[in-house]
Length: 95
Image (tube, rainbow, N blue to C red; front, top):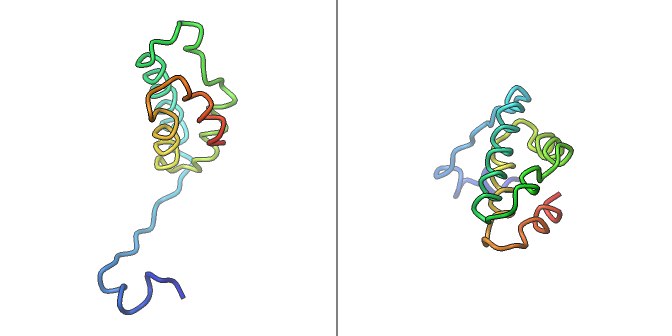
């Protein structure tokens, strides 16, 4: 039995169905590209790195999101914090 369905907890919780739609993939891709660009600019990385992450990396993250913005938002938080030069390695770990 799910913890959230137990009588002692069910009265103070609410179940929410998250709509999963791959129609959001284009917006998720734009969001990821924009936020990675912001991370690079905030880190003052040279212009050649502005192509990071690569198209395959972005597509993999879009696919992993499965239509939900929560996944890429969490990935970006992991990659960008703390703000240091290790953020690229954190992206590799989040795959």
